[in-house]
Length: 192
Image 1 (cartoon, rainbow, N blue to C red):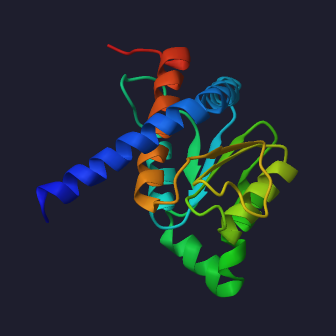
Image 2: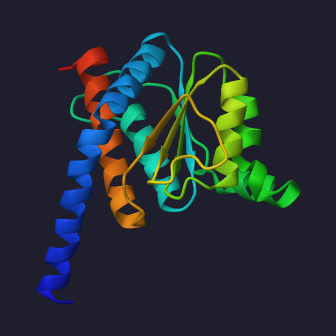
């Protein structure tokens, strides 16, 4: 690996981040406020995705259950791809397409907030999970790449302006960190 390759990746990331900061700022703020409203009212976060997006969903949940910048009360959150027994049961007994839909049907309630991460915007199980969350009365947030949520619907679609999976996921991480900062600022109760 050459220094030029590394520099090119970082430069491409910088460009995607700059475009994202411009195009997603308003929606990211709206989602931050919706997240704080849901958690402040005692509702939960339901987050899901496949592969790297599953890791992003788990990361968000970990920050809410654990801590981000400050020690504060834990907030109710669940990552739907984290339990191997549940994932393999549902995909074996039903299909991969209903993996998140089935869990959302059991776990989501009106007032919750559901985050579906999909870099391509085409993940059928993510689209179905978001649709079921919306049906249950949860606020739905699709966190995608440039294509948006293809063939699906969500209350908020944050489409990172890139088709490069790595750069899309890098911005997804920044978004979830921004949301966690806002949760800390608005709802954090620092403990000694």
